[in-house]
Image (cartoon, rainbow, N blue to C red; front, side, top):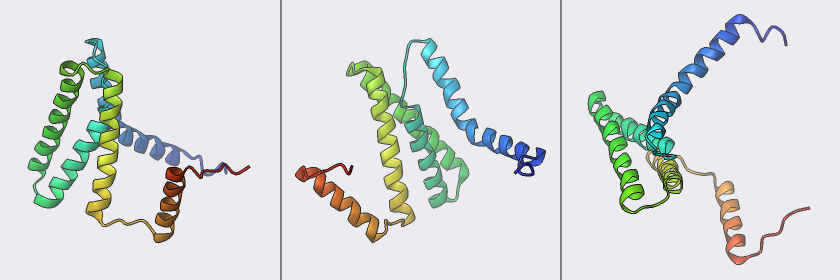
Length: 145
């Protein structure tokens, strides 16, 4: 077990963690600047997910990285305007609307990845899900003891 925690393994782990965390650190920095002005945007992660997907999908379809980056930036800007419209014009609670934007980005992103990648659920998992949904709608849920 002690051979697993060598300097090479620990260095590689920390380096990969910093690489994965960099987008979230940049989003947190932007959100910190926004919060100093009195705006709470809890939808930052959802906006990042939608922008990342549109960038990836555009790059996949057009083979043009510059266009893909511009589309991702445009998606982020449009979602920022949507968040501002909901919070300012419709006077919705910033926290609740931000969570709604996050959930929209999360659900929309997952659905589009499954649709565009051809990923399908196995029949066994799909049958279990349909059975559970049927039990929920019928009110026949029992908690096993």
